[in-house]
Length: 306
Image (cartoon, rainbow, N blue to C red; front, side, top):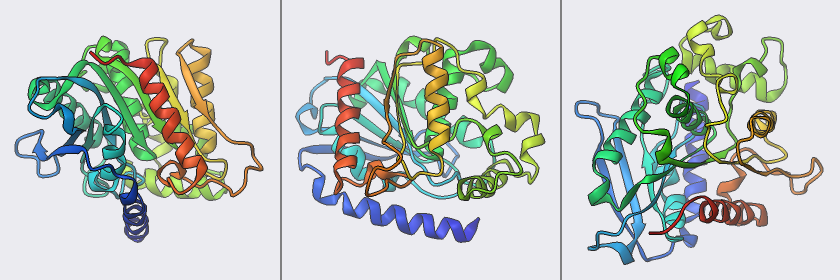
């Protein structure tokens, strides 16, 4: 897992650097706010259009949980992407959490709820419209974001996992879910695909248990089994060459069957060049640009500027 962490981190840094040329100048930031006293990993960054600086204007707010297979990554990896989103008229927030194996499930889920409590409490000075939170993530971050949304919108699930909801369901305006994992059951023990093998390594590290499939508590992280029609409107995407694509497709199908307003962006199997895991962060491609545009259209449709 530690070797994988190294490669993931290198890749994430390269991706982030490639986004620099797309970052507009007119975005302000407040960095490294500690959202939980005494927790050295509990820091977040806030970005917003410079035009709202020194005003009391509050904007719909995208809270983004970074990816990295639960074992790597940090808020800096998504900073440039969040600045680009902020320039479209939103407040955006990048959240750090403790990665595995230093901490195991459900630590990052609890930390994300703490971050939301902090943002809710300090909304006034951070240009946050606390009635319009959008939870977002990429890869492992999508799973964490979706699990927190399930805690917020399904009281019986909140009881089951015993993690108090940080917000009222009415405060969630939507979800941006990029290339996530929502059903650990798909990662069956005999799955030999590249994606299944990789995911097993990550989930072993995140759960702290080699036989995580038999762990009743960890099974609760398969939120596909716990979402309800109250789950927020969702934007879901994954590349045609992403080993986790089946996860996104299955989750989208589930939400649609529940009547949750769901916007999907998937590509034909033969789409070329093939789109890898995290394709949305590559704005040098037309597909990356399309994903960003579709996310912004989704935000415009599901939030309102006051």
